[in-house]
Length: 220
Image (cartoon, rainbow, N blue to C red):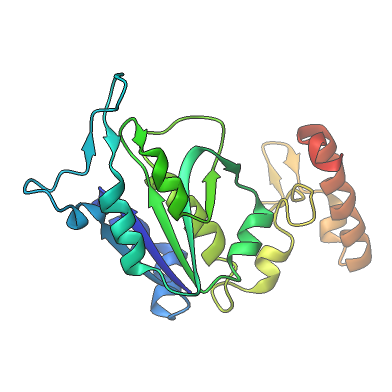
């Protein structure tokens, strides 16, 4: 998979690309990630990418030309262009599984007060990671990359994500490790029984119980 991220703040991705699973996925060549400063596509002498909004109002609005020029330069027949915006579809695990099938993603990170409405004509999807507003689309872009890349073949073991929360519209079951007894809180005996059938039944019940308590909407 190839991912291009359009941003005004490329340095924000330094740690993200050089730590943990994302770094290993890049080293394994499961994914290539290209950080693109779309200021480089500005045709103005001062590399300006924003301007005041028509009709008045506070803040600055990202201009069409730099972003659209970057998209058109990078996209090919297998590209899906995604705009990070709080007005987009709320991101869910099922979407991560859909995006892992794509060959090339372009993620557009907005900033400032917003972006020229006409940019929407050049994207395929609009995604929000929640009902709140951030200063830019960089953190949502990282969240999407992380959730998709970990699903790619060879990045992590399949069994590691097969029972993730939301995979079967339930939350994950509780897990434990040593010590057995921590301040009077003991690991459930069934997990020490060695009876894999009973352990599977326990985990299934706990997953359902936790989902009913914390996210009953998932079971609707």
